Length: 327
Image (cartoon, rainbow, N blue to C red; front, side, top):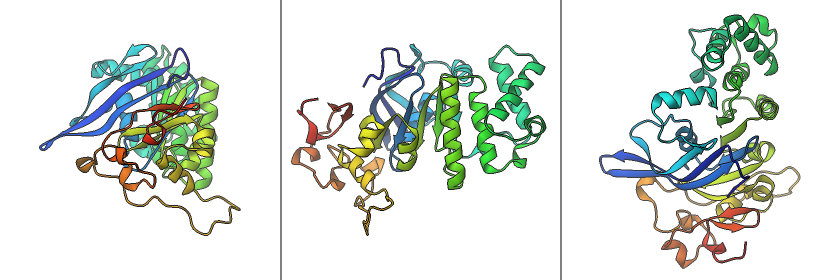
């Protein structure tokens, strides 16, 4: 679905396979979406749905035995899925930022946070040492690090988890990229700190004009943070659309099940709705729609044929219940 005429990111029919002794396993299967400048797109689904793999492929960090075996990724009008590792490294630092769920894996414990920020800034921008250090201090202040002139010379272990994640956000945005991939950026943090980090991420991206892909399994985070949401199941996008539509009036039975499983204050409901069963393994995907064994509305065709994305309202849904309906 096109979000505007010049998307910052366009993923077209992308599939990701893992080569094994028993043959290729398809972990992501033919996903297509676009992202407008400044837009926040949420990707939600159960563990193993392919959310993080999608982000990894876009950033060029997909490692063997994983590989993109079909489709294309275009960033700012340039196809990037065929770039060399060195070309992708330069693009990743300058134009594509990444924020991961554990900040300790993103920060070098043997370097001060200032050294890491200054190195990133000087690698991708034409700044001298003093100018880069000033920019690093400014970014630490912008992400809410107190006394940044002092803390810039401290090491990651001297920061709390929430403060480390603020440093990672500064690191991802200090070269002012056009796109940020945020993969479960608040999972390891307390709830109160989560809200602060999400507010910070939204504000920083709004102020600096970056588009964001926010990967999470938390529908509450999606509802509060994103402009659009893509719901993934077994490597496919089953529904994509404006967040208020997908959260408030979901069409796909899986999306509906996710929404009904969210506790709501004052709802008066004694028990939450649950989706029976579990997502199938990659080695044992059912024929047809992968969700049909768990779907309360499954039709005979669901067991035989995989549905194609269909426009429904302002979004798209891959479900036989909507095949042939007017957009």
